[in-house]
Image 1 (tube, rainbow, N blue to C red):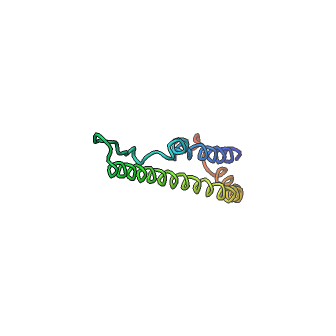
Image 2 (image 1 turned 120 degrees about the horizontal axis):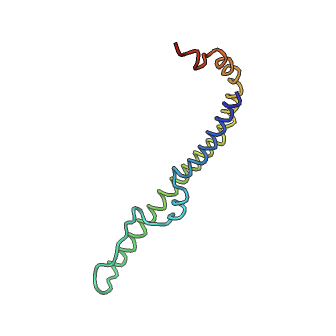
Image 3 (image 1 turned 60 degrees about the horizontal axis):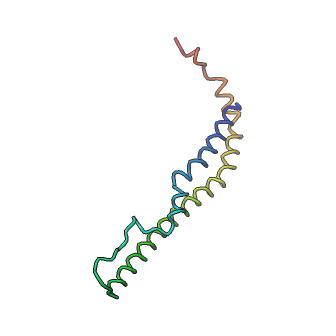
Length: 118
């Protein structure tokens, strides 16, 4: 019976370890203001042109804004998932405690591997 509780808590810990890797949280924080898909406009003409400079500036700002928004929404979804788990875990623990007598009875009534072999 203790094995069921140990496996349950091990799985909870594994989920909390897995989620930051799944959402790439350290990378998202490190590249929060990076351009979207690394799209940037570079100077292509010789000399200075105000319209070309404004075009490059606006494209680069829009690209960085898109990158920022996608990363922020991904991080917000990560926080939402973590919050849901923190709120839901007590309910899962209560369910496990309530159903543990049934699980124990099922374990007693099931055949051992030696009994299953004909």
